[in-house]
Amino acid sequence: MFHIRQHTLRNSTKSYQYLLRSWIHDNIEHPSAGLIIIGNEILKARVKDTNSHYACDLLYKCGVKVQKISVISDDVEEIKKEIKKFSKNYTHVITSGGIGPTHDDVTYEGLAKAFDDSLHYHSRLVEIIKDKFDVKNPTSPNYKMAYIPTKASLIFGKEDNLRYPCITLENVYIFPGSPIFFEKSFGILCKQLFLTNKSFAKDEIYLNAKEELFANTLTILSNKFPNVSFGSYPVSNNSYYKAFITIESDNIEETEKAKQQLCNLIGSDLLVKNDNNPHIDSLTKYKNFLQKCEESYIYEETLECLMKFYHHQPEKIVIYFDGSIESQIVIYFAYLANTILGVDNKLQIICAKLSPQNDKQLIEDIVKRYNLNIYMLESDLSNDIKKLSTVKPQLEILLVGTEEKKLCETLGYHSKNDEAIGQLKISNPLHRWTQEDTRVFARFLLLPFT
Image (cartoon, rainbow, N blue to C red; front, side, top):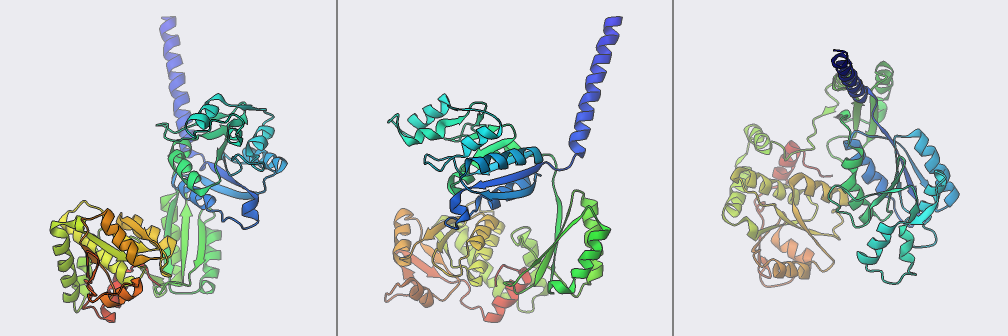
């Protein structure tokens, strides 16, 4: 009987400890992170740091609060001090840079000193550099990348899909500095290493007003809601709003309450409806637009035209995207046509790199929003389009949002027939649209344009 009671008590204690740990895990604040960007090239503006932006975005989605970003030089003592300080202050420390084969790549040395460790040639890394990087010379500087702290561990990802692993010691994670390698490595490992069961309750409002008109209101509300973070951001390149405000906390109800009071104090006349996701529930939004539109036939005609194009052979169609509002509208209608038809194929887009309207962020947003296959063109646009036709001989139709003749002039393509480039027949589904048609449609759906 004693043994049974002892066993029951032990199980009850374990259950209690498990529940307690679960409660603590669910109720602690968001884990924190500090980023250390290492490299003289960053401090001297020879290279732009994009790694911190990329990491912050993914960490935020994982429920991790980035509290500090530090940019430091390739100096062993400075790296040691920063890692030591960050390791004490934040849940996770993420470094970028300084792990290459050259004399100024000293991050591993700084990491070892931060934790009173020594360096050694890790046998697995030596093997990777020899076999996967095809480095046969044993005196090659590349083997410096295998000289890491003795207590450090290697993380390759759940499916061992990284050629060179993330090196970790204590709560510090070492990533490469080159954006190409950083984004691949961090993108694969971020959820595995840092994902939490917590998220940020965030909302936004958009205003047709400058910041000085609502600055006092934000001061009042920030004092009234100490657990809510308000962010104000002026905008100069949007035709719909002049600023937007973010409202964020750890609690959905608190965020919503703060937002409601903010909207009440600012007034509905300054608030602007903004849809950052025109692709979500696009058919319903489009139907609502038609019901309120006085002359809807031009839009219905355009959709019907694109549905005919995509109905039988969607793989034969490619859209020319130059960043203009017209090309964005063509993509939207093509997406809508495919949604109605139930076509699973990704829309195919060609994009001119040198177009002044083709902002990198705009391209990324368009590709992500509509799940596109995009082909970037170089300087000789006409030849690049012809090369694409060679690589993808099935392509027959080039959809554009501008006049065919004007497009040919832009591409530097001259022929007796302005309706084709090589084997691609040019078609403009907006050829009957007026400027007013374009303005009305873009404004109603709030397509991103300046």
